[in-house]
Amino acid sequence: MKNLGQYIIISSLVILASCMELDQFNPNTPTVESFWKTEADLYTGLMGAYAMLQDNYYGGGRINSVCLTMSDMGTVTRKSGELYNVARFIEEPWEFYWWEGSYKLISRAYQVIDRSGAIGDNENIRAMVGEAQFLVALA
Picture 1 (tube, rainbow, N blue to C red):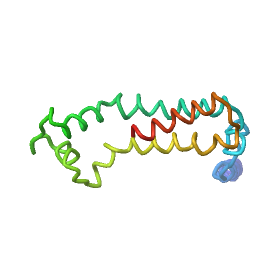
Picture 2: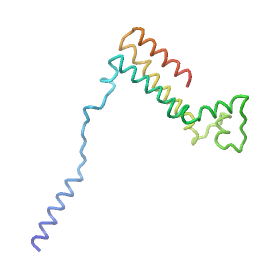
Picture 3: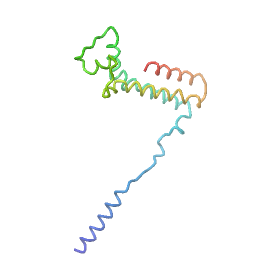
Picture 4: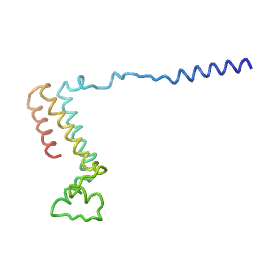
């Protein structure tokens, strides 16, 4: 019985000690102050913007369906479901994901444009800013 009381005390101390939250800072996590310093960082940001074209924009086939239905080449009927509302610009709250990739692409491209002035001004940086501006116009 005496040992049982000791086990209960020890196990409750272990349980209470394990419930404390541990906040650790990862020193390898890039921050805004540490990332946008070099031309290579600007290029990495631009590649992040291009990645949105593969993930949600062209890769998912959403933009092709939407653009085809808004042109004269494609038709969409009420039987098409949510694509009908998107093609007719009737926005419903659950249909935001159709445009989510575009908004992410614009956000990432504008980060490249905004941060380029602090990095410098040479031919490569101007070319990357031009590509980012094109991506904004595309989205």
